[in-house]
Length: 263
Ligand code: NI
Image (cartoon, rainbow, N blue to C red; front, side):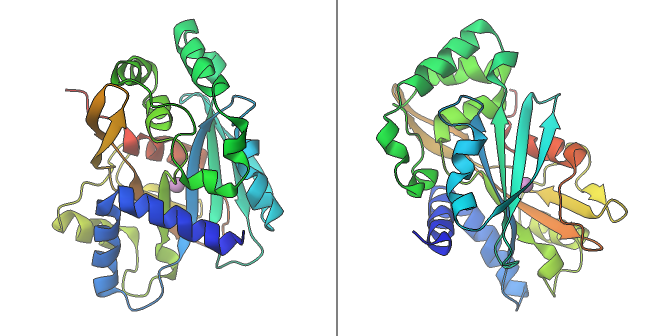
């Protein structure tokens, strides 16, 4: 499979499950005349050996992507790696994994049981990265149990392997000159911007600014019924002075874009 085909599939699954993403892109395109490029695509997983971030990275590495750096998010109890392709039209790939061992025994047992039950053949094609959950549907009860300790874990267990977010490279836009402008435009059109740590994370000085909409709720089938839970979000990035990496303190807040509002 060609990398472009996989990325197209990832985009299709991501937008068909989350119609609000397409609405945002259409809004941006109503102003922007240039091709919209993606700064990065993010995937989430657990640090279980069968499905850890290295496992998810295999196909990208085989398609010319190069590993760049490991990042650590102690407060969120997760680690991430990102990968860059020599063809700079291709987005960076950002893969994070939750440190299962940092959670309660009950939580660890739940995740390990679910992951241990996966059929290994599910990973034969890179399309597993667009196929959602490779495990049996979890119950909503388990979703809520896991969510008490980690919104991130609840997201992975219920959505599985689909892109968590794509990221518009505002650096490559011509109508939108900065993130303030794009955030304001989206707010005027009814979208909520993640304000954890300020609407814009980072600064020109450190080379990267990021913002994102909050994930909208989508209907997901659990083993005991259909429930509305946070789906995917869309991110916006602006880079300065050729800075090519990521900033942990910024990403820390961006992870919260799929958090469920506590009632
Ligand atoms: Ni991101």
